[in-house]
Length: 375
Image (tube, rainbow, N blue to C red):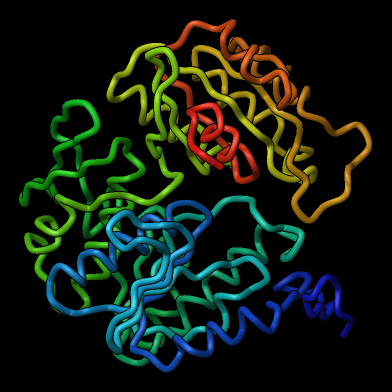
């Protein structure tokens, strides 16, 4: 075992790929919530919003949950809500942190080719998600998309309840109408609800949170009433301000699936001409997904691609943001690269009604700076 950047790494290969364990600080936090009756939400996309939604429902129904979520929830003044002995936790698959939990109820929102530097293969990642669900306690429940029910096969075999969500699932939120940022929806064609967030992906998140709430006896209609005033999470289509009448939004999307969902969600409102300022996150992700990132950006009216945010990585030869911009152009979009120092000028040269600053790096601070927020 060697310590690399504060992370204990054990090189083991096989069905689970390369095993990496979380650092001591994260382990202590996980150990603390493990003493609670907890709900754990994992997934490539949607886990932050779904965790916040689940905590919101439980709070509104008098259960006083302790909530730990990887984003600031408007209404909680942060990503932590202190409460009672029921905990709602965002369970991150990175470094296999989520395998330290044995939740009462667990949910997987989605799976994508992410964190393969930890797992080696998509197959190994899927196995890990299956193990996460299998670790639910006796009498517990596993919530999965209907399209990925196989993830919960072992949980079902050892007697855990399995609830499916999304199209064809036990709980499916279906948009019925909407105006502006608000969408109206039904659950399985029966109960009616309102969500003050756009996009089909947010209805999928709502369905998962409703399913989790049902495992502690909260009726669907009571969950819908709670979600009607759910305020959202920071950096999830967060409205930052305006410049010259153009609305500025900040969004955490950095994987192609998330990028597509976010842009299509805005098209649903609609707001007019959409521009995107995108900051690719990680050289390795850009190397493997530049084409898909470009395909997503082509859904906007125009896009600017900033230099890659390296995070924990060293540069890779030949990997740069131009690969993403070029892919967007090949997919019929209008896209070009732009440096951070020239960003305001590049933005002013485009016609738009809304601009989304998208990515997991420093692009949010750029958005706030342009909007005139004090540093």
